Image 1 (cartoon, rainbow over the protein chains, first blue to last red):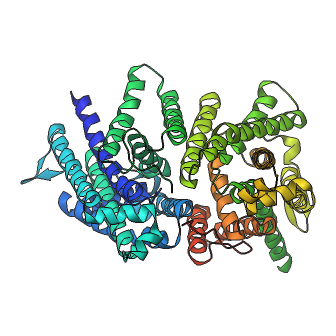
Image 2: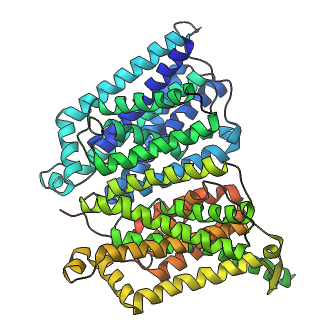
Image 3: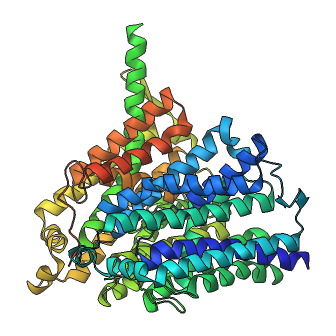
Length: 290
Length: 299
């Protein structure tokens, strides 16, 4: 039972990451490889505030989200000048810089050894949540994130995003300045990633930089692409499929080292297959092309 | 005192030249492919790694001499590069795939090949070096191993050879035509798909040579290709896509910057400096030092 709860909690965290990336990649057509950087930013901010300064869990989450919103300018401003694959490279550079800082600025982040002893979230007078309680919390956050993305993606705001994705020049010509939309969409998306990071940090109670590498970004991209970009159900579906896949491999009795490689071979193969034959993903509506 | 400084300076320059030759061998092919097909060939990193591991299999499993195993490694990675182009990129381009879908597909291809290598050889660091290749020679008070001098020689000669090929052979002319305007080249009777395939063969051969030299000089890990490719992408963007001289200059400047950072701040700050440089170039001068202005978004 604890095992099942664990899988569900991890799925909820990845659902938040996947819908936050879908806001950028699916709705606005801005494929960012820096989502793990903001995920890590949320995790580290929350962990440092609670461990070193004794702040509460809620303060940690909110500060992490605010910090991500501010730092998202470092990625959203390049997106104004760079298109498509050049933007992918720029976000890659940002991701590498953040990882390097987490890994090397030992005095602040603990370097490769990470931060141990992050308190599990306590609410209402310091009760430490149980697994089931944490699942309620994570699921609530996932549903809220989903609602945020649904609201932003389908309303008038979302229609401008879609117009920008399909034809930026046309959107501009119709008087929809892309600066405001790009800056706000990045702020919203990275804040949601930071939320996922804080939840992760307080759930596993120990973090190190290896959880926030570019491979993590690529995993989240795979979830969005395989599930289907720009749709409401695609990214959560992709998250559920890709979280449960390694568990299935494990239950099939593969040695863990080989299972890790096999898992990535399957992700990679699925990405190639989807791009070749169904760029829209399983249930998506955007196919990364003009 | 003065002589000590000369020695140190020379050593920094020689180290930078060695590192630059690993980068440039990956960067030239990557830049050529980016220029011709307008897509980021991330799987290039996998061909680089593959050449080193196949060579390793030849020398340590089958007991071949390096002079036999290395060409087999290069041949293997040329066929891998061509297969990826033939089986994945070409059908996608035919269907009018966007550059973003091609990029994602090439990332997926990279993941598959890298993890197949990990499955076969394991994730541990392995060595390909031999005592004979590690012997040192001295140039102007700087020390250089045989591997490094071979790397510098090939890192200078092969890109120049590609430059000559592009400038003065009919194949090179066709390649430049494809890079300038694929549609127009096709209309004028250039067999574009065939020319692109040949570009992949050349690019993969250069990357293979780079991978084997790197494994000889340093060591090999299944992820070595991606770190080499990232540095190469930075060098390409600094130098300018499609310019061989630019890519060579970009690789050397980048390697020099890395050496200086290592000496002053420490090796762990290489990555932030490299990628901050990349961001600065992307924002301020995206066409690089020698490059043509970047393509405009098609309306």
